[in-house]
Length: 250
Length: 186
Image (cartoon, rainbow over all chains, first blue to last red; front, top):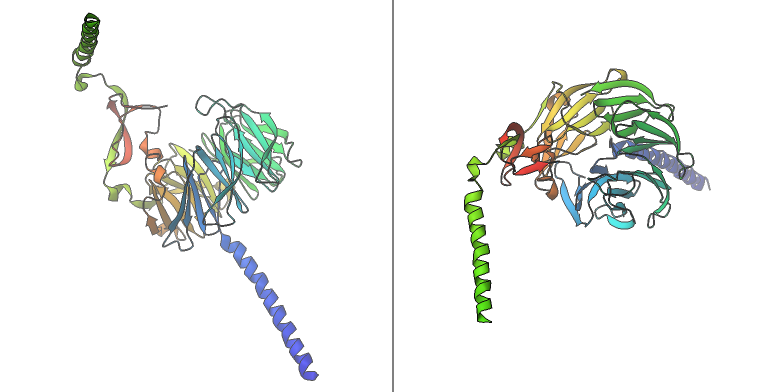
C-alpha cells in the first residue's frame, strides 16, 4: 500500500514536471515561430517552415526548415493575375486582378484552392481575420473597370466568401487590421481609419490627410506606413486614433 | 473568266510591289531613325549581378518598395537594387542605418534572424544576426520563374521609352541615354 502511494506520488510529480515542460515547450514554439510582418502588398510570406510566394501566374512553395538548404516543393500554375498574399492561420488569402482566392495550407507543402470570390478586373490586396476579410479594389485604366472601394467579405465559411458590403473609395491601395481598427491607404487622399467592432460594417472614424499612403503594417502598438515621401510611424496604443511619431524621409 | 484572273494577279502584284516600295524607300535604315531621351540597360556578369553586400551607410530611397517589420528593425525594398535597413529600437528616433545590395530584389520576409529575399529569380537567405557581418546562408537558383523578367530591375525606374533588355544578360542598372523607341514603360 505504501509502495503504491509512493508510486502514485512519483507519477503525479512526473506529470507535474511533464506539464510544466509542455508549457515551456509551447512558449518556446511561439517565440521560435519568430517571423516578422509584411505589408498587404507583399508577394512573399513565411508560415511555419515554408515561404509562399506569388507572381502573376504562379504560387511557389519553398521549404525552409533548413535555411542552409531551402527546397522548392511546389509551383502551382494559375490562370489569374495574382498580386498579393496574406497569411491568416492555416489559410492564404491571395488578392488577384480577378478576385479573392483562399488557399488551405493544412498540408503546408501543397497549398490547395478552397474558395474564391470573383469580381471585375482590378488591383486587389487583402487582409483577414476569423470571420471577415477586407479587400481594396482600385478600378483604374491599368487595373480594370471594377468599382473602386473597400470590399467586405464574410469568410466564416472560407469555401464560399460572401460579399457583404462595398464602401466606395477613390484610389485605395494597401490596408491593415489591428484588433478593432482597419487602416486603409487611399493614395493621395490619405489614410482612413475604420472601427470594425462590427466587422461587416466598418465605420469611418477619421482620415489622416496630406500625404500619399501606399501600404501599412500594424506592428503591436506601432503603425508603419509606406508613404510616397518616406516611412511614417504612428503610435496606435489607441487603435482608432493614430498619433504621429516620425517621418523617415526618403 | 481568264481575263479576270489576270486582273487579279496584276492587282496582287501591284499591291505587293507597293509594300516593297514602302519597306525599302519610305522607312529610313534603323541607324538614322530618330532617337528619343530614355533609358538604357547596363549589363553585368552573373557573379557581379548576384553579389550581395551590406554597407553600414544609409542611402536615399529612390524607388521605394515593400516594407517589412522584424523586432527592432524595419526594412524597405529599393525596387531592383536591394533593401534599406532601419533601426527602429526607438521609433521617435528611427533612421536608416545601412543598405543590403541585392540586385533584382522586390520581396523579403524574415524568420529567426534569417532574411529571405529574391535576387532576380533566385531565393537568397542571409543571416543578419550580426549586422556588421551579414552572411549568405544559401542561394537557390531559379526558384521564382516569373521574377526574372518581371523583376523591377528589368525595367527602368521611371516611365518612358527604354531599350529592351537582352534576355540572356543580367541588368544591373539603368542610365539615361538617347534610345530607339523599342520598349515603353507606362
